[in-house]
Image (cartoon, rainbow, N blue to C red; front, side, top):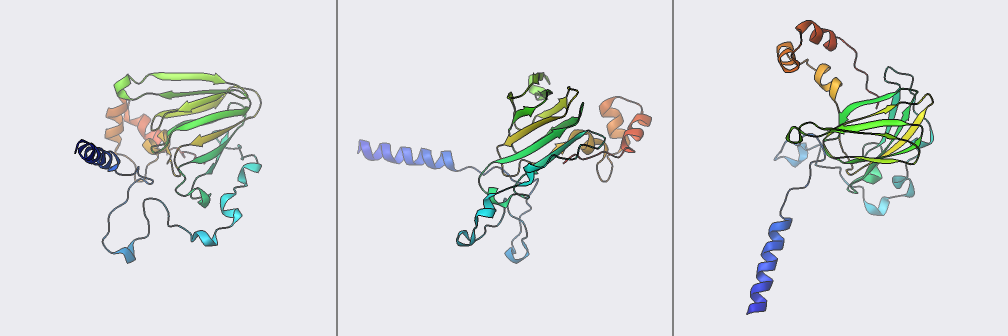
Length: 222
């Protein structure tokens, strides 16, 4: 009886422990009762595994440097599930980051993935900012060839090439679709624009400055 009772308690505990929702793989997923009208799921529909070929598990776009001739001086080439279908359900993605001298990958967040960055060439100044609960503390580091840095999921982070030569890094993220929110683009370049009064109050600046920032063409380096 003791063994049976222990087994039942363990089974109940295990059931409770694993009865949780999976992490979201997109910004939102509105429920729909009509399956014929459903076009997206939390993830992707799967190809018949019997029809899979080697090319499904290969990605070749990292062979070529990204075009850094833009206002940010950087280019991020992503191998997320949308570009690399073989990653579906595997919980990992990658990106190639090319930097011109003093090029910047601007402050942004990945709402669904932790990022680990390795520098292949050049010198990068990188950092992230903690949440309000940890007083918005800034952690920074100068990385050189072979160095690795990790950016926790959902925190604002950035990478800046502080060298006089091009820089190259690769990032590994813990989701097939980690998402991307570039702070400046989202705050000042949303569609439609956020009400000026909201941003004036939030940033404690004159509305002329907000109007100026909202009038800019915020470049996306992805």
